[in-house]
Image 1 (tube, rainbow, N blue to C red):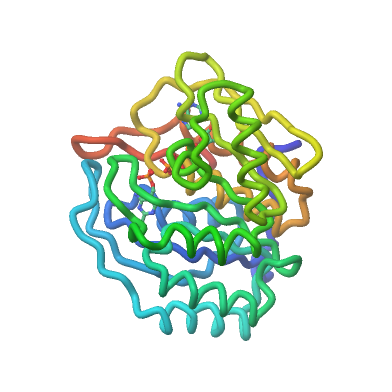
Image 2 (image 1 turned 120 degrees about the horizontal axis):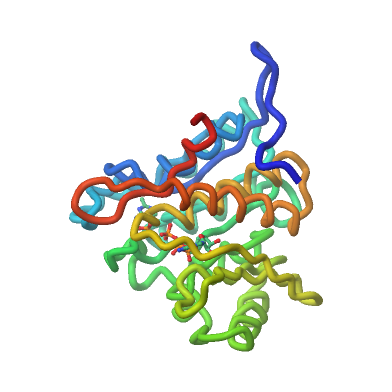
Length: 279
Ligand SMILES: Nc1ncnc2c1ncn2[C@@H]1O[C@H](COP(=O)(O)OP(=O)(O)OP(=O)(O)O)[C@@H](O)[C@H]1O
Ligand SMILES: Cc1ncc(COP(=O)(O)O)c(N)n1
């Protein structure tokens, strides 16, 4: 497998994808990370913005959510004209926004066996600042998981959603099963925050087989946006028709390369860096 995806010839329309997510003013995560990955992989990225965060490398100091009807309208207006081959979600902010997104996705055929849907169930920033209303988790799981082709929680999100504390390979399997029981076709339990190893093993599960997607642990504090970058790369590969295991293997290599070339930014955590692609 290559590190890159096929690109359109100059003047030809590229493959289109969409991110439904929040804006990170610091440019490290959220829609900024998604669009960077889409662009550097040669896709045209469309956006449904859910919230504007006031954020820098040290944390999130403010959130302005977007009217749920405006979020849904972005999805409808893009799909009815431009068309998309895969979609990913990130920060969805509130239960009302999630319900509007789930309704719009169902209406236009995103997820549920239609256009592939990657759901990254973002609950908080890496600094611990909330990005999802406390009463919205049940709606996120109840409305988005049944639509999802894959969900990609980190270990904190796994604990919140399933109650499983992932500390080793056995609990990672139990978490994958518990996630899948909530309606998603595939579950990916990311091992990026599993400490004490020189590996960073993610576990993919479809209800039958466990597939370990391994990679080296990169020793860097600059991992802001790693989850968004991974999910955006999965979305990009699915849009090109990759199978789910191949899409996750591809995306894992993409984020590992990004972590290897991550850079300092501000006084806190810098971002993963997909710009290695143009270096
Ligand atoms: N230090 C690391 N070395 C190698 N891979 C890592 C490292 N940290 C995270 N990853 C990988 O990056 C991807 C994202 O994982 P992570 O668990 O960090 O997601 P996340 O917490 O959702 O990210 P984000 O910081 O965007 O919220 C996974 O494939 C994970 O294995
Ligand atoms: C708008 C937005 N979306 C997602 C994240 C999660 O990324 P991280 O866990 O790296 O803070 C974020 N901080 N901001």
